[in-house]
Length: 194
Image (cartoon, rainbow, N blue to C red; front, side):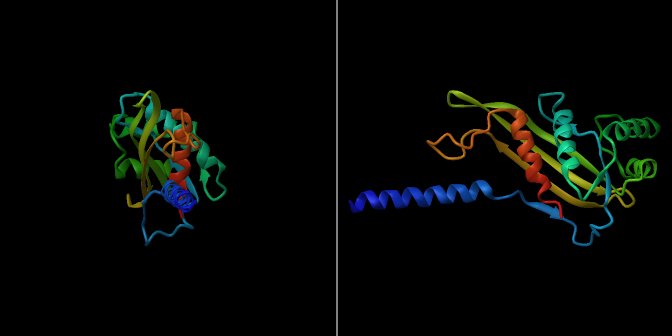
């Protein structure tokens, strides 16, 4: 009887530890000198994709834009308008679409769209990964909010996760699709914004 109770206690403690590990958030850099009241209008630049999926950057960017639109503290420039201005700026400065925006391009974007900051993104991994007999999504991405006037990074976060069960043996909490995991990671990243 005592050994059964001891085993149940140990299993319960292990479950609590796994739950705590699953709830831990990503580490983020927040510039201590940034005036967060200043950044009320932002744009989202074209994401860079480093994964095998050539549309990974576009897919993650769309989800992030949706999550940003749900927030009440930031005004987001319409994605179509921002994309059009970004394309014109890249052409004007001879900056190809696969290159990150430099400080001159950020200043130009700020002047043309009236934003104080631009969110840049890099999708490092975006694929289905085999785990035993099943396939689960694997995504890793980095986001930055950059001040358009100075080029200074005011917020930076990297998140990554593989779907699948959060707890060994049990199957609750599983993430089966790239879309579902993308939404989870974008929400997790945005929770680190001040």
